[in-house]
Length: 475
Picture 1 (tube, rainbow, N blue to C red):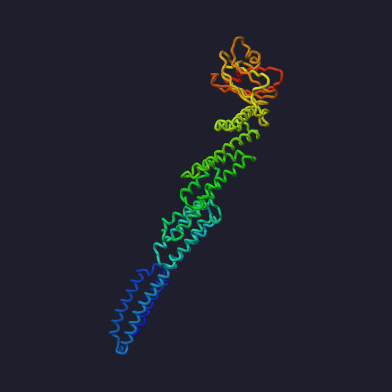
Picture 2: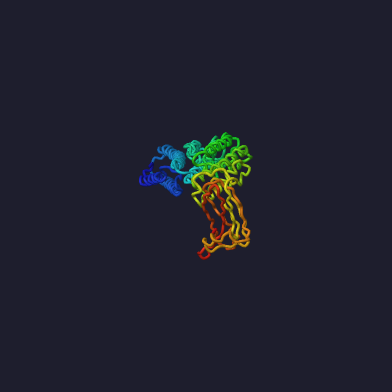
């Protein structure tokens, strides 16, 4: 400019303008290295060319030298101050970039609202990775300074099922939050490090009590006592199970005692599985409830016409609780149920608790090559077993059996004499298939009879061979 080389001055201005176009606005990557080197080369060439031309230019340099010196200093100060300003602008660009990254993590967390944790876990981990990166790699930045507040919102978002009182759904996300001190750092989390503990304990208790009475209903309660043994929730486990036993016991007189009994069995197993013997005081209470429930269930099955199930339940009761005052009654109803399963007329109402011992003589004999068990129900209920008849065989037809059974002279037929009160009776004859040697199916046989006063009755059990090829003998 001083030597009035306007074209060359314009080229310098253009080079500076080009640098500004490349450099502004400032971003996190700064000015490209090629732009800086190119502009530096232009400056060096311009300075050298200006010095050469100034020496030869016919100007009053003495008057203009002070001005040139001032301008030179100014031209050195401008790029220096510009570099400082640019560095500050670059730092601000970095801050903006980090804040954008923070906003991205915030959006990820916000988008998970209302979704199940299994579907959101990966996204939550992604957001947490961003928060950790800000803390680890950009400590002191405005974004990093805001992370603690974001973590508070993060925890509440993950634990939303607990806030909504969906305790079973809250267990897994709260367990996840308890792992974060080892990932993020306990000091960084501060109070959040212990934030999930009470909530998880409460959720384990609530979920465990909800599932109490199912096959795996004790898993949450066991975990609660193992993980938080001194918590307020842990202190409620035993009283809660005791109340659950009382509730199910009260249902034994209701419409569905079998369901209540099944739940009582599961509760008993849960109590027995609690760590450190915590459920031991409940053992006797639960066992008594299961005993009462099994008996009530068997009677209910009989009254509902589910005779096969009733027989199995009550036989099991009598075998398991031999010392119970109800075992004899259970065995009586089980016999009636087994007869009724084959002969529904025998059902309809519970049998009287009366066995044979007074009434009319009723002689039962066995004319079969295998043992036979005879179950009967009516005014009296009971069963009798007769051994196999030596020398006896099977009959080809029922007519032949009726004509010849128990009538061979000189043959000793296994027999028993029952004393039955008069009334309608129903019989079930059960054969031992293995003793027949047929290797096939043996059908049980059921029948009915009316016992009247003043008569003596004889009943002969025999075996008829089926006429269907390999079909096994029928009793």
